Amino acid sequence: MKYEWWHEAVVYQIYPRSFMDSNGDGIGDLAGIASKLDYLAGTLGVDAVWISPFYPSPMADFGYDVADYTDVDPMFGTLDDFDTLVEGAHERDLKVIIDWVPNHSSSQHPWFLESRSSRDNPKRDWYVWKDPAPDGSPPNNWISVFSGPAWTFDEHTGQYYLHSFLSEQPDINWRNDKAKAAMLDTLRFWLRRGVDGFRLDACHFSMKDPLYRSNPVLDTPRHGYKNLGEYDSLEHIHDRGHPDIHGLFREVRAVLDGFSAGQPRFSVGEIHLEGEEWARYYGNGDELHMPYYFGMLHGDWTASWAREVVETQERVLPPGAWPNHVLGNHDETRIATRYGERRARLATLMLLTLRGTPTIYYGDELGMVQADIPPDRQQDPWGRRQPGLGRDGCRTPMQWTTGEHAGFTTGQPWLETVDPGGALNVQAQLGDPDSMLSLTRRLIEVRKGSNALRTGSYDAIEGLPETVFAYRRGAGGETVCVYLNFGDEPVRVPAEGTLLAATRSGASGPVDGVLALDSLDGAVLGT
Ligand code: NOJ
Ligand code: CA
Image (cartoon, rainbow, N blue to C red; front, side):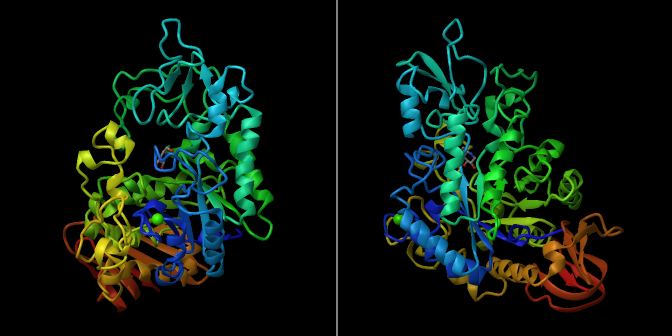
């Protein structure tokens, strides 16, 4: 197997609103990110950044409502700032992955403005327009992920348009060849500008039932790991993931491959599906390079759960496909709050020693916690609409220093920082060998220096106490063994080797026969 950069990379997700503000307006921007490249590529040592959307946008969904796919919102800077960022990143051998939002644009995108202007506008069919049902109600029973009908009536032209998310995010009609060509061209625009890859937002939504049939109504709602209210009362067989999606992804892949000579380009899809259905998005190595695997996001936090999550992915992977793991992102409760601080350390050790590309969410390397934002200060439209589902709490500004607003801005931050005066910041944690930052840096360093961890095989180590999940990674003659104690009690396990990293910073040196692990401790041994 030939390994490309994205097989071996540690990816780091940046929410640009919240990473670093360069001009004191309280909102992060591209120049802010550029000013932190030494932190990313040097101090932390990640290999790639995925930057959430920075396109011109009315910000109804903080940039996931794109009004122009080939520009930068003035709030985040300019195309020149983007070029400078890419250049600075590449000088440091850091890859740049950007978000691409294929399922929907903003309702303010010129394409949609044209589309809604009249029934015979040439771009009418670039979006999904349908007549009302005979009683005037929406064309079918589809529900928006963000609650309420997935259809909004347009008085002016007397038809409904489809939006799988907010009404400000009309779904693009990927069955229209001109719309498709225009969208694929936006990929080329950024590929020419040097991006190394794309994260495809909500991308399995892009192809629906061509007959727009209603979804079956479930007798009992089926909730995923989040309770999405009425959305969960339908079986989503018609409103997303139509098999034609695979043809579309092959076209996307062909565009990327066309730019990959000398600079391999990469795609990762946000696809909240499971098992074989999820794995289908690899195609025969001709669709997405990988769909994100979200198994680690939720669970009962036992050793058997963790093993099952890992091995389920391994089991369903098509031949030659590459796994990946994620502990957090801009839609999920911060891991340090979801699982607790000690468990977050153990989870990070697991993330960075498993087979497959790991993605770290900004701030998780500090153990940043979920902010508790009172309902009247919630900014996320989803949270305003459905209390409890708001995502502001995991989007607070990155914490750089012990100073005011954690060094994120010289102005008033768009959301308050968490833990003022505490240790959840880079400055406080850099010199502290026990900090989450030191642990994360060490694990990245160990992964970088180890073929076994980056590309080696995975085998569970059997015969250990049931609270322990342990695995062996091997490549060439090198073997690395990882032991994770998920239990509340200390354990002693048979092991030999040299400690390369551990959740407990003091742990080092040879292990000769027995490894003692406290509750929620993990260790990485080179043998
Ligand atoms: C998934 C993104 O991760 C989320 O933040 C966004 O709100 C929806 N897609 C809609 O684009
Ligand atoms: Ca700014």
